Length: 160
Image (tube, rainbow, N blue to C red; front, side):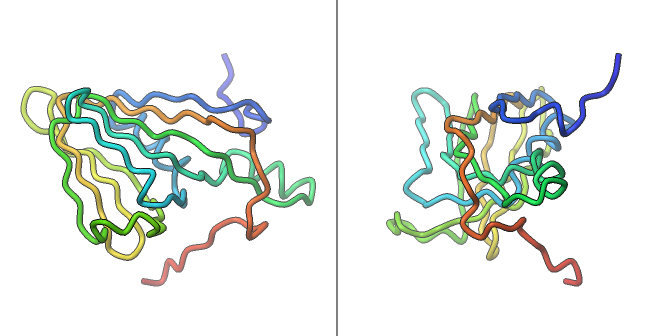
């Protein structure tokens, strides 16, 4: 058996599930630099589900785009977390539905009996913390890829 390659993803939509911390690292890398308005944050306490509709940079397509000299792409995706018991946030203005947020990473801190906390780190010192009964996160593309407005890959200042 051979490991998957970036080229294997081509134009097919992603649908990935993270059930452990290694899986979550993959989802975090693929969702890095996703942008979304605060209005696309959804929390249903009765269904114990938290979801974001994000505009995800297609990191998996970057090598092919660079090799072919074509612009970079984004795609709309749903990032969904199941078995959520509690949601907390910081650095997000309550009531400002037009605020644009940028996702930097997702991480999981285990607790007792499989429970734990998922933290979504946002640019500008924002964060969303989800207390969960189990680690169950899904990332699913829901539209066709579209040209990234900047036509370039996001860049980070690593000197900080």
